[in-house]
Image 1: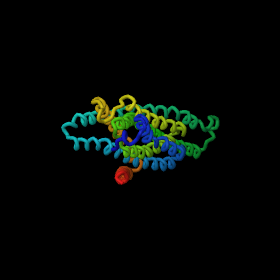
Image 2: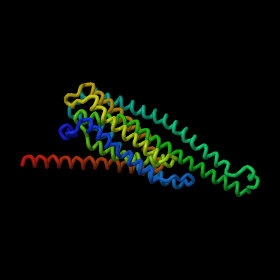
Image 3: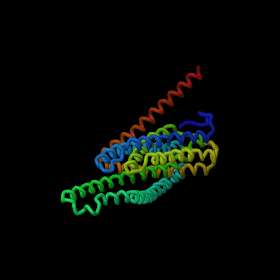
Image 4: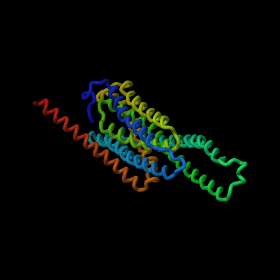
Length: 338
């Protein structure tokens, strides 16, 4: 944790905006790469399955990174603070975090069910025209001239088309739900980052962990939505919206309450606990109810291995960042002493 007021000379709101945009910059990057490298194979289920495996793998790895950001950088920091300052005095704060985290998880589940229902209706409506055209591939006047083999071939093609359409629908809904989950959790996440900067403390490792975990999430979601038939520009636009919204939310706390940590009012700390709980709860619900289960359906137990790799990658990143920070401080101390 670094004191940003002593480390930088920028306005606090600009620092918070930079932190928010930096953590979310991988959203449009990952979405653009995922959408541009994914092909739409409507009549070839095998191609959809292979690309879904790649998307599921990146989704599982990102879930592991995000799990580290939630458990260690958010809740782990709160528990460590209680160990340092005393458990009795920290009970109100941690209780607020726990209650709001459960509410954030519940709100995410409810909102996710709603958006999946809406997206499912939209997908079925957009696919109805294509299905109708496919039904009338053979003109009515020529129907009597079909041989038995021709009827069988047409039925086989229709079965393959239905199977591919089911795979596309599944990919579209999972990708859309992933995007919506990030959108919902991105608002309190951005405000939380701004809150940390406003109070004089911010974790560069948290920003980097979020950046890394956000990339595979956006990549996988974009690829799945592309398989579902959404255009590349629409997908990139959706993730640019999340990117900008996260940065704007991070800039709000310094503008509304420009107070340092030692001068922060009590209600400011309470708001921080609420935002911490909402962000952590919604992200945990997204990981455990959507990201990992969907990756497991496609990859089986390999999803657990990839998620573990993502978690450990975030651990190594934190250790490496700590070493760099420690070395920088020591070098600065030696330089000033000389």
